Length: 220
Image (cartoon, rainbow, N blue to C red; front, side, top):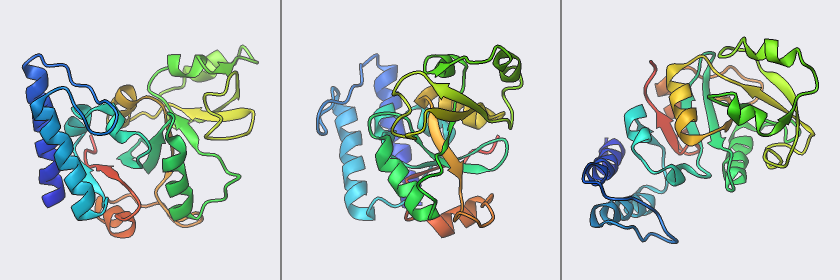
């Protein structure tokens, strides 16, 4: 409860700053451009110290009102159209989150994670179209189909050293809103590799609270 209340206070402060027309922006370290935002980051730092970085349960609304860079390198659990997934935003700190995920899942390092996206623009910017029929397959999105593409640049290189990448657009309102806000996420199921996936918030919290940074509680 303390963790949930903590994040609610953070999100409330950010919403108030936005309502007042104040620009919110993180600089190096923990300096912010507003007094209210400075209070928010102080709470985050205190949380990190007092709770040892334990899992934060967060609503979808709270996530969408939190600065994106606070999720950089963090493991985020959320519902998809198939199973509950855990992932990390594909950015400069993606390896931080990937290392955690491979470690707690005991996953083979040679098995890359799939990339979840909310729109086709995020796909076409970084892949080569080697077959015209791929456009017909993409029409099956959103859904449970993962398509394998040849990479056209180094954007996904920290996710996999292969020259191909698996990409999917989930048919989940919650997942799509998260992806639209944070950008592409490298994700996988929440489980120890080879074991059944966990699909209950209570089970996820009990089993992986020390390994997952954020758990988005919305299911619809």
